[in-house]
Image 1 (spheres, rainbow, N blue to C red):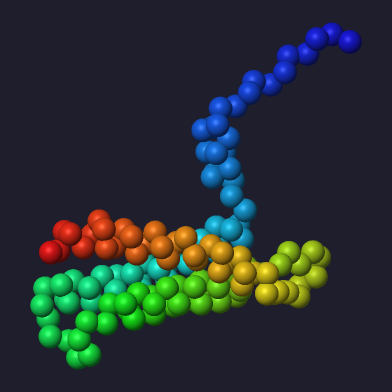
Image 2 (cartoon, rainbow, N blue to C red; image 1 turned 180 degrees about the vertical axis):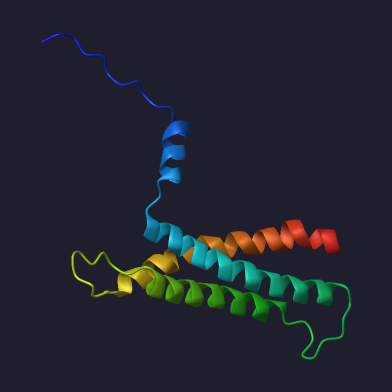
Length: 131
């Protein structure tokens, strides 16, 4: 048998870029749904945080800790529910759509780092532009 040329070894970056471009649809939907909720909720938190920082006299006083808790819970729950409804299991040849708690778990696990990253960007990067 003649020596065949082996395919060239891809670099780490080429492998990761290919994985990024060819991500599975359920993962993309989970990330996009959690990210969209996190951006909206993070924007609302940012408005509240900037208002408190600039000295606005809001009812209830300074409730930023509670606002962060509500933000995180909202992102986790909404990301999980949105993924549950947007990511059905593969149905095969039938027309019936099936959903399981695993879809919600996928959304939850996608929402955890997204909630953290959006909050860090809002407070550490965007907030200093307004104060």
